[in-house]
Image (cartoon, rainbow, N blue to C red):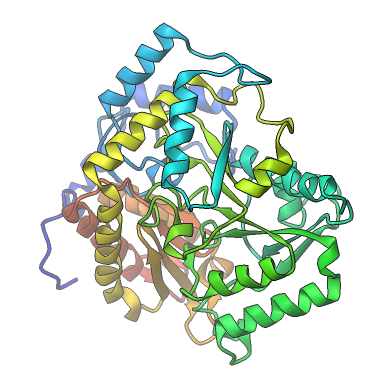
Length: 465
């Protein structure tokens, strides 16, 4: 593409080097295939990308090949790979006291300090923190707690929850319930009520009406139909991640939450992905000027250096739920809390939150040049949650992978082998979610790689030429 940018670290002339193999890597791949079952893996596909090292936004595999990480290992390595200061904090805490439960009256200093720091940076209504080990656990616990909250207040019939169609709230059974069920896992309670997602690109969803007006009216009509007295909460990803990196219009969440508050319906802001700078702020709730009843956190909370999740509770909600069980054996893990607190230190010192906004704008500016390609329907994002939605027909907005499902893997592998770029592909969208420390040069390389791949897609054959 005729754009004046820094020279990419990998070019097509390096194809031979990028696709070479050696015995050690092949052996690791075979060993993996024998014993590891990969979520969403294909047992008929023998290929494995065996990663062994990382630094900043760069990864190396077992063959020594180098990649730009535009995936952040499930969107969570905010401060980049290979941070030795975080490893030292973990080692020091492990050698002092690795873990002891925070059940009942047991406490520890790293957890106390970390929870203080979470609350200090949160919306002013937030008063208490509940800790667990992952975002899925945290979403599941939030689902239990919103029902328990109403039960304790004498309204046990408030069990139904409102969710956005296509949203994602974890992989537990509670997450399946919030998704309205998942094939093959058995029945889930019929308590999830789906609403139209705020997806600006798909104007057909709103019948010509203003998006936010349509969604607010739909919410009000749904509450009237179901009865506010039966609804416990609404769960909302402030930027819809797995659905395709979909940021709502700025007035959407404030107006939706205002309706919920008027009816005594709790609002659970799912910031598992958006929190800790991924969308450009400590919490996107602050960007939207929201006061959620519960905020769900994970992923960037410790930049992936330790598994950790948390719920931030509004003061009134915390009072009602005081003494409730949950959290699990690893809740308040001392090493996780110490590392997560050190992660906050790095974010404060290096300010990757502002970098997230700057690099996000760079992605959108440079990716905007791709909109004229036949397969590119939309380019969108907030901070370093950037999506390129792919279509087979721009008029109908038909998803590209719906027509050519094999292209999903073909594009992914082309980017790795030809350009040394690792991305995520979710739904019909290429998701670009690198560590917040990615450089301007690396952003341009990723854009050039994505542009090259998509320019080569033959819309008639579904192949990369």
